[in-house]
Amino acid sequence: MNAPTRFRSTRRTALLTAVLLGVLNMAAVAQDRSDTGRTRPVAPAPKPKIEAPQATEPAFTAGGERWIAGFGLGLMDGGDLFRVESADGSALAWGENGETEFTASRFTATIDPGAEVTAFVGHRLGDGRWWLRGEVSRGASDVAAEALLGQGGEVFQYDRLTFLTGSLAAEARLTAYPSHPYGSFGVAVCRMTADQATDLDQTGLGFQAALGYRQQLGRVQVALETQLRRIAIDINDFRPSVATGAEPELVYAPADELWLFEIRLVGSRAW
Image 1 (cartoon, rainbow, N blue to C red):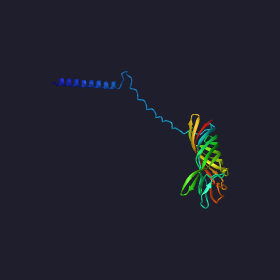
Image 2: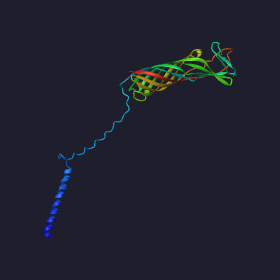
Image 3: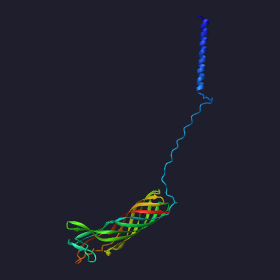
Image 4: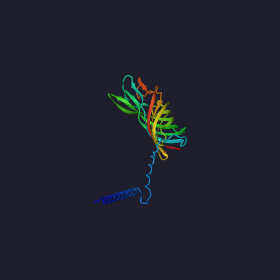
C-alpha cells in the first residue's frame, strides 16, 4: 500500500472513531433524561422523626366529686380479753346466774372472729387527695374460754360481745386515678356490751388505721380494705362468776386494751 492510500485509511479510521465516540456520548446523555425530556425528580428529603408523647400520671384537681357514701360487710377478730385461774390450782365451776358452763382450774377468754356491718360518708378536702370520713360500724363476736383440763385443754363458749363503734378519720388517696389505693388514720369510740357478764359493759376511746384499694366500676366503686383498731378498756374490777360454792381466791390478769382487726368489702357511690 502506497503512502496516500495509508493516509486516507488513517483518516477514515479517525473519523469513524470520532463518530462512535459521539454516538456513545449522546446515548449516555439520553440515559440521564426521561422519555418526556424532563429531568429526573429529586429524591424527597427524609421526614423528621416524631416521638410519641410520654404518658403522664393524672394530677389532683379542685374539680370533680366532693362526697362519697357507702356500706360494707366484713369480718372482725380480736385478741385475749382476760386470763383467770384459781389461786390454789383447784378446778372451779364457772358460769353466770348459778349455772355451770364448764369446770377448769384456769381459762383464757379470747374474742373469736365475728361478722360486722359498716356505713360511712366522706367529704373531700382541698384538691382531692385528702378526704374526711365518718364511719359507724356494728360487730358481734363470741368469747371463747380456752380452759385447762388436766394435761390437756378444751374450748367453751363463755359469752358474746357486741361492739358499736363510731370513728372520724382522714383518708389519703395515693394516686389520682379513678381506681386507686388509699390509707386512713383517725380516732374511734367503741361501746362494748356482753350478753351475760354485764360487768364487762363499757365505752372506750382509741385510734384506728386502714389500708384499702378502691376499684371504679362505672358509677359505682368497690373497695377491699383492712382496718386495725386499738380501744382502751378498763376491766380491772371485773371477776368471772363461779357458779357454785363460796367465792374463791382468784389470780386475774385482764387486758387493758382491745386490738380489733377487720377486713371488709365496701360498695360506695361518689358525687
